[in-house]
Length: 310
Image (cartoon, rainbow, N blue to C red; front, top):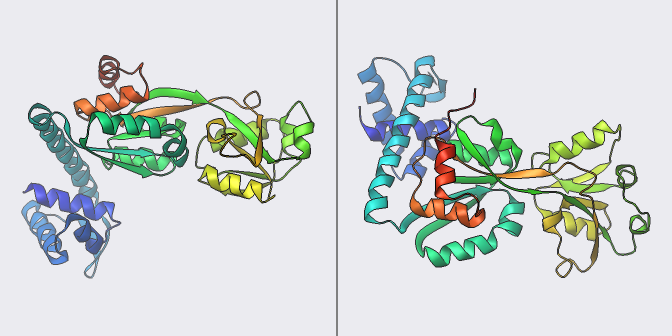
């Protein structure tokens, strides 16, 4: 049994059983991966993958267990590699952040600028997705740190550290009748078509639940993952926008007006998530503390040592 064989079965599983895509990702050949999987199955005297002819169609029951164990082995190998790098090249390496568009666009830029200045030899990559996608990327070791809302706390493999709380605002074109109809209420909001986040993003389920608890049925005419797209369609008169307060800037969004809606919805919490079993490099602790000064290395380590919640 060889480590590259474990990498191959993991990547094939990640790529939806597509050996060609796995080969492209791993910069190797499709026949080479197929041969190594076959050799591993012969050594173990069992099938890891179900097949229909030459096509892989699923994992066998022992294959699921083997894949889970392979993930653990490869994570520990990565952790061992990180230990070595920490003591030989402490200020160089790579850092992958997974986050939502709103965080990447409106919250992270000053932190990223500071990080790049302090750690010029660290290659920084940012992936965008929904909160559940962010969580899955961290669970799968495709990202070192995840930054998103409450959905990440549903993953037992992750330690989720509270970052900050935020709430919502309503944006309208200038002269919109809602601007004169104060105070703002949920009922008044539902009188107009609404443009807001895709419900998988940025606390969308909390928002819709708040309306439902009041027996209200808002008319969502467009949902998007991008706050700038929401504001564009509000400017075109498609409806009023309901978005994170941080996404409105009076100078940049001069054609729009903002109404504070923070008293109408419970606050949402953005979390910083890392795998419970990960070894964090020094610059990773540094990035976390740049984001949230209260999360110093001692605090993060204390949370990582906490037992997994059942």
